[in-house]
Length: 135
Image (spheres, helix red, strand yellow):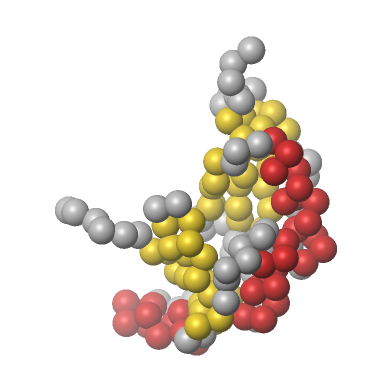
């Protein structure tokens, strides 16, 4: 199998609120609404945040409905960050724009990284990791 590009699609409830969250809390300044979705370009990945009806136009072809995470996590979007301060800054902004942060970022002894988690307004779970070099 030879893949040219990868796209992950996630359902959202309120496109305006979600756009504000990703632009202002996370700094995706080039994000905008196009055909019922917000496209976020990440390194080697396009993330399509789609209104529930637009999302279900795809999933119903496979006999599925949109599902939101709630207290569960079906996926984790994990990003390696360039600085520990970036992790802290994002986690500080998230609650101001409707997201949630379950706790402070900490050093994970097993991986050696500084790790923090947050959920966007629809409950999609993100992990931010600053890989720390061994001391």
